[in-house]
Amino acid sequence: MESKEGRQRDYSRLAAVGRGLVIGLFVGVVISLFRLLIMNGLLLVQWFFGQAHHHVWLLGVWVMISVALTLITGVLIKQTPEIKGSGIPQVEGQLMGELDYHWWPVLWKKFVGGVLAIGSGLFLGREGPSIQLGATVGQGVAAVTHNTGSQRRLMIASGASAGLSAAFNAPIASTLFILEEVYHNFSTLIWLSALASALAANFVSTAVFGLTPVLHISYFASLPLRQYGLLIVLGIALGLLGRLYQSVVLRVGDWYHKITWLPDQYYSIIALILLMPVAWYLPSVLGGGNGLIVSLGMHTPTALILLGIFVLRFVYSMIAYGTGLPGGIFLPILTLGAVFGAFFGKLMVLWQLTKPEYVPIFIIAAMAGYFAGISKAPFTAILLITEMVGSLHHLMPLAVVSLIAYMTVDLLNGAPVYAAMLEKMQTPAQRHLTDEVGHMEIPVFANSVLDGKQVREVNWPQGALLTEIQRGERRIVPRGDTLVRVGDLLIVHTPLDQHENVRQALLKMNGS
Image (cartoon, one colour):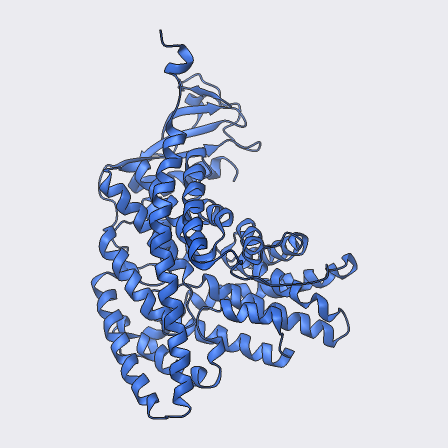
């Protein structure tokens, strides 16, 4: 006779891990190939401009290549606008139920467009596109296995986590980024599936690229506590620069509209032509910037040169991103943070406020601080840089700079950049017009107006249906007289087209 325990055994978590592993393996293969092609494309561009110093006529060839790349990417963008830009806002919109698209055209066109755009040497990152590629693989697996609703979104989130993990070899931070910044949901099933997918993708990526951390920077001394005041100054400076970055990156597309008569899918010709003087004089700074970051850890230029590189990369990354090409801002943000951290450290050494051996610590901390301020995801920033650098010894400086930069941007009314990009999208790809239902999980906090109220006493948002309360290991089917308590996890179902409005209303009631 089957026991009660056996009848009630729940395999949903095991199934979530299994799905995550399968998705992660597929994503790992796709993103590893994506990285390889981009790396070789960048090396080819650097070799090309090296040859151009001996054969100036090759500059004319570059103009023709630029026209060809513009036409190819322009056609892809016109056919499938969902591949434009980073891709993270599109994934966030999908998970919120605000937009949707067919997975196969986005997958191959984002892949091809990303390789052409990022591999051409433009100051664009591979991480945003990797997240969208991963999410699209997850969506494809869901389509093939006929999963819909919440299971489909779970698989999309798992693919997104795997995409970032394979791009950065940082599975823990990748999982947290998807939960903190993209999905805004920390339920058990979601983090289990996302973590499993990230680990599987990281396994594939590590097998291809090796175990060395992506941004390995060696340092030989810990910053003394008496110099932590410098970290506060650095955090404030990064917060101010981060707010400036947010303002410019959200407006640069509009500036293109005002200064050029070209159709928006062909703006890339401007960025590719303007790239020529940079590729001629400074080929080492081309691309997303991971090579530049590693080189700063080995040999740091003078403060004046670093300031010039910072301004150059800031301006050119805006020019590149404003074209709408399939490329992200994730790695360019980290590169700008690293360059500014090196500049700040060199300046402090020049003013005899610190020692040269502490400069790498400012580089590492500034990467986290700049990303924390711009994305407003400080936990992800701290963990991401820790995984990418490959050391735990700098956690305190990372935390201090990230917190100060985050608070500075917050006081200046800066919004998370990816959420702001999603809101700014003028023509969402395809809004949900069906009655498909999804669910969300809302924890009840100590300051929530829900605490201590009966279910019938709560003025639930329109479209919200409370279907279950999880209290520890107990699962409660709510009735009108069921009390809501601190620590409860509320399972709320809602139509997908009302998902985000309901979520925001519940979070406001919850005091979060």
